[in-house]
Every structure is written in C-alpha cells, then in structure tokens.
Amino acid sequence: MKRLVSGMQPSGQLHIGNYLGAIKNWLQLQEQYECVFGMYDLHAMTEGLAPEALKKNVLETAMDYLASGIDPQKSTLMVQSWVPEHTYLAWIFNTLTPVSWLERVPTYKDKSQQFAKNINMGLLDYPVLMAVDILLYKAVVVPVGEDQTAHIELTREIARTFNSRYGETFPEPKMISGPGARIMSLVDPTVKMSKSKGPNHYIALNDSPEIIKKKLASAVTDTGNDGKEPKRPGVANLFQLLNLFSKVETREKFETTYHKKTIRYAEVKATLAEDISSHFADFRNRRADLEKHPDKVLDILREGSAHAQTIARATLKEVKEKVGLL
Ligand code: AMP
Ligand code: TRP
Image 1 (cartoon, rainbow, N blue to C red):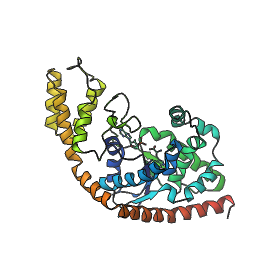
Image 2: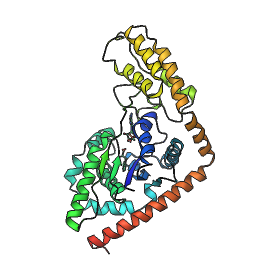
Image 3: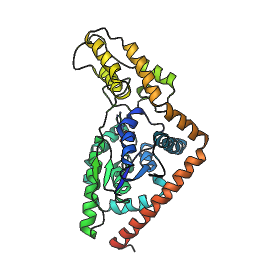
Image 4: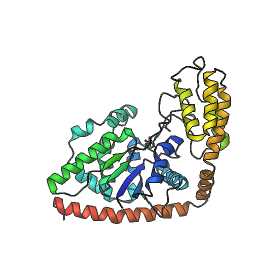
C-alpha cells in the first residue's frame, strides 16, 4: 500500500470545518492508503502556546480523531515531538533550504502579521519541519487544504534538492485536496470558520445540542436580500450547512421560502441545530467514552508513535549515510 501523511496542529477541540474539510476525507483514505496521521505539536509551539495547553490539546485532538472514526488498527496516530527524528532531519533539511524560499511562503507572511510580537525562527522554518513530517515517511500523497499548497511545493523542492545532491532518496509527494467544503465563521461569514477568533465563531464536534442551538441562533444572517442570488455570505453559509447535514427536502423547502421571501432564519437555524446535533450524536458518545479512559488514548499514541519511529529511524539512517554523518 502507498503511504499517506497528514495531520494538524493540535489546537484543542476540532470544529465542523476541520471535520468536513479534512477528517471526513481521511476516513475514506484510510481504506486505500497506509496512513500516518500526526499531531504536530512542535509546529503548534511556533504560536506560543502555554505548556498546559500544548499537552492538553494533543490529547483532545487525538480523542477527536478517534471519535471521528480514525481507526488505530488501520492508521498510525503519532505525536510529532515523540519522534525526535523529526527535528534531526529538519536540521539537515535546513542546510539545503535557501532562506529566500521560506520568506516567500504566504503562510509565513500571514503569520508574521498575526503574531507580530513573536515572529520567531520557528514560524519561518515551519515549512521545513512540515517537509520532514512528510518525507521522513516517504509519503507519496498528502491530503491537505488549498492553503497548504505552498508548503507541499516546498516539500517537493526540498526532496528534489536532496535527491540531486545526495542521490535518489525521497519520492516527490502529491497534494490531494478533498471535495473541500469551506465552512465559514458563524459570526463573520466572510472568513473561514476557525478557532482563533473565539468560541461563537465555530461549532466544535463535541459541542452539546444546547450549545449548537445557541451558537446557530446567534449566527449572522441578513435582512433585505431575500430572494436574490447570490446569497449574502451568512445566508449562503447556512445553506451550505443544510446541504451537508440536512435532507434534500429540507434544503429545498428553505430554498423555496428564500426565493418567496417568506423565509424565517430562526426556523432554518433550529432545523440545522437539530440536524447537526444528530449527525454528531455517535461522535459525542464515543468521545465521552474516550474521555473516561485517557490512558487508553495515550497508549494508542504511544504505540502509533513507536511504529512511526521505526520508519523514521530507517529513513534517518539512510540520510545520515548519504550526507556523510554515518
Ligand atoms: P487548521 O486548524 O486551520 O490548521 O486546519 C486543519 C485542517 O482543517 C486543514 O486541512 C484545513 O483545510 C481544514 N479546515 C480548517 N478550517 C476549515 C474550514 N472552515 N472549512 C473547511 N476546512 C477547514
Ligand atoms: N501545516 C499543516 C496545517 O496547518 C499541519 C501540518 C504539519 C501538516 N505537518 C504536516 C499537514 C504534514 C500535513 C502533513 O494544516
């Protein structure tokens, strides 16, 4: 089976955007590829997380992956910092990567604005470490969102540079983007749903039905544009959610009332709250179970990371021999 690598920075609980944009895809891919899913805690450190948060987020993210259906019998779940070969190879890749490549990466420019008071070396070097996450496992495919395009391109360039200087070692991985629903924030529907802006902006996978109802009730919609196309962002976002979580008839009913200008957004939101809640009912049960047994989750991560390390060690040994360190 061909190998696939993907993962996220552990940022606490995942939201429905993460689920629809990434995890749902992974569930299918884990049937077709040998998957390594990472919790990239060393990457998360570039954003200056508090120590307690860093540790807690790894566990929370792992529970979300598992409750979503990532199956540790089929896929490897690893924690980046538990496999120190990542930082070792990152140093070697650093010596091959021109600073100018990194300064050009759009996410670096964005993050330097977002974290203006903490533009640390890690932010600049982020893509090199990400290249390691992928190449250490000689992955051939990487499912990520469009915002990661530059990172994957850089990974390919690093692989090419290494191969041409030291001999064929790394395959050039391909990026695959899923059907990729882009879910927008409930409070500001012109930006994508993310955790960084505050809890009312997103619906966490683990939110209770009451909280989902409350968050949707205060979601931004619009008045005065009913019946017109294109819909305003907040309304379009609700319709996108109807499309993803509700029955076709339900969406069509609201489509009709929208065009007749008789739509009541309170009704749309209440319906959506119910449909989203029931969609994640099994998830919440499995998540609650896992929360009772954090040791089991840690065991899965330990086992996964140990397995990842056997692959990582072999690659690093090969690299060290080729570059003259062994
Ligand atoms: P992030 O937490 O932004 O690093 O994203 C982790 C993964 O979730 C990436 O693969 C993103 O493409 C996906 N993702 C994050 N936010 C959204 C969103 N609002 N809609 C769809 N996918 C998202
Ligand atoms: N940069 C990715 C993101 O923000 C997270 C990430 C780190 C990653 N290392 C990776 C994704 C390796 C895929 C493969 O979403």
